[in-house]
Amino acid sequence: MFEWSEEHQMMRTALRQFIEKEIVPELDAFEHEGRPPYDVLRKMFATFGIDVAARASFAKRLERETAAEAAGGGRTAAGGDELAAIGDEEGGRSDPAMTLIPTIELSRYCPGMVTALGVSVGLTSAAINAKGTRAQRQRWVPDLLTLTKVGAWAITEPGSGSDAFGSMLSTARRDGDEYLLNGSKTFITNGPYADVIVFICKLDEGNPPAERKVLSFVLESGMPGLEQSKPLRKMGMHSSPTGQLFLTDVRVGRDRLIGETEDVAAGGREGAKTTFAQERVGVAGMALGIIEQCLELSVAYAKDRVQFGKPIGEFQLIQDKLARMEVARLNVNNLVFRYLEMTQAGRSLTLAEASALKLYSARAASEVAMEAVQLFGGNGYMSEFRVEQLARDAKVLQIYAGTDEIQITHIARDLLRR
Image 1 (tube, rainbow, N blue to C red):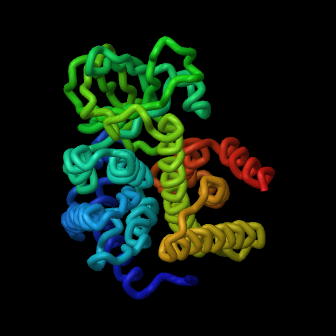
Image 2: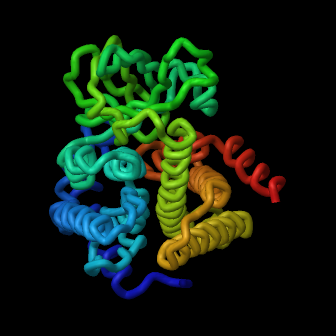
Image 3: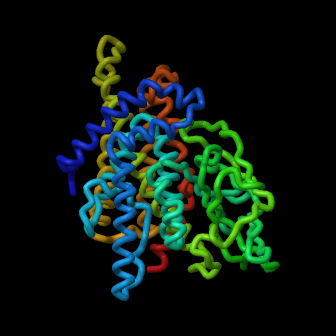
């Protein structure tokens, strides 16, 4: 794959038109006035039939699993890919590009919306879909996939950061046939407004924290003992509400324990790692959208901005910046295409491959955005010029879903194991 297909281009054009009509005029409200993004995202889903396609694809998956189980086969791996189901044929493989294209196009103007959307439709639904029982999946996944309900995936704690499991203090303690959940989470995307929350914690059996199993529970807003904070103030990604969660003796039944069993593979760590890999692919799509937009804005500005009697694009130093931006765009674009080809061929990225994809893409987006600010000069530092916002938004790509340093560790360890 070396270019988008005609169908892909049509989808990109249609999405871009929607975004420029429905989102761009209201960007300041999302970026500076605290307006949540969910209503406009639901409108996007309805406009393109994404909600209907996602619900239908989820139903098809369950039907195929039922047929396979009746024939003596096991359950197929389930993920959060129903969003990719536009044009999915019965029993066929959906086109992963149809998931990534909205990510790319939204990121050209409002990367924060992608984070809010991806965590709800992608990470939260996938966590339940991958390991949940059929009843749990039917109960929560369709509403998450269609954005009927907003989802949050809660793993990060105030004292953990990159050491998500080792420093995890949130606990689940058995109380008869139920559990009491306690702890706090921070930097939780959609936390202030989430209807459904996947809460990751450790089973407290009186054993040392390092030996405890990691379990995941599905919570819902309004449960006694669950407090959701107001949105936190951030450097960037203002259109993505981020908050804290506080749990004090939240009582849940086994029906809210994902999989309804404590005997989960690797104590639940492997499921979280799979979710991390999925999240890192999404970061690459976001990076591509940011880079494309910064490059287009920079080229236009270099043509129009006149200094010393001629457009600044005629100066070699400016040309160097534009050339480096284009190289970054090509490289990230090719990495995204490689992922799409692998997915179409039925291959999944390893955690190290996803880390390499994320590491390069995030760094490239941050570097290109900052160079765009530099090219714009004083104007680039002003919020009226969108490169200022994109530069702030791009930086977090090097932090969330695993910092650059964590990506390097994953890649290096994989190399050293060979």
